[in-house]
Image (cartoon, rainbow, N blue to C red; front, side, top):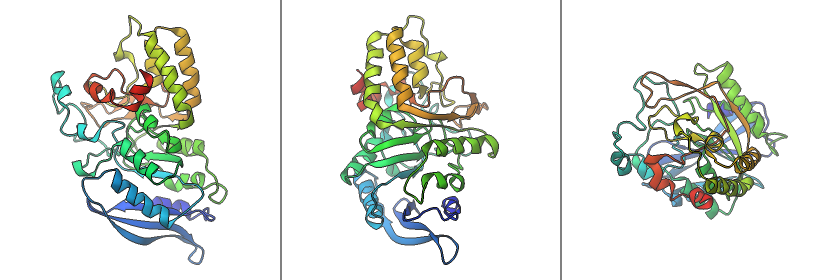
Length: 351
């Protein structure tokens, strides 16, 4: 919040409004307006109202709180930032305790999503069971408010995945997400608010938001780790059809998932680079080429550091090389999430 206020100190809002809902505890939240006060010559945070958060969190709660923000600040266009924890498309009940299918495959329940005790702070810190949302719940809550966001920015780990993007395709035009962990500092709002509120808040520059995010971690942050990309949701249906053609083409006989770019330090891995997976696995060169062409139209503004940081399963190795980068991940071929992955809309659309 302080960094957003710092960015607003440039007096860039025009008639645009910036509101924030922050959780003060499991059951308590506050709605604030963040605005530039011309009389004071600086940005201020003003309390609007207190909100009660009934547990467990669900789509109805998200819908209610979103409506509170929308009613306070009605506008012609909206954008949304979600700054919290993130585990991609993975269902909230699968996080803890871990699913039985992991046990059946012979993995210890302590092997996945367990942070190394000496690791740096990242955005996915682990929270309590009642305070999680599934991506589908967020989508239905937005639909219930009868709006479509210009963009959704996930200041959260692992949200740059195709399964989540496809679930949100009808409620936003663009998605900004990271395929890997986002460091605890998050996005440098003091630097990027000017690109969220272009031309007195009437426009935005998503490419600059992405490039400034990665540049901050390259040049200023202690941990040089950042990945980001923009997904154009209007192109996702075409990407699903191109992926379906890839799946129908079959897998190369010499393909090994071990060679595909991954985005967390676990063994086994949960998130793989979608573009790299298709390029290495598809048995039909023409289907792979058509897929790549469509992927380049769907996922743009791709930026990354040379390595990414992971606090999970690292055994003392926290930095991992990024050799191939399409900007978006998938959990296709991930055995320990196979059952739930096959229940996603993305699976249905591509098989």
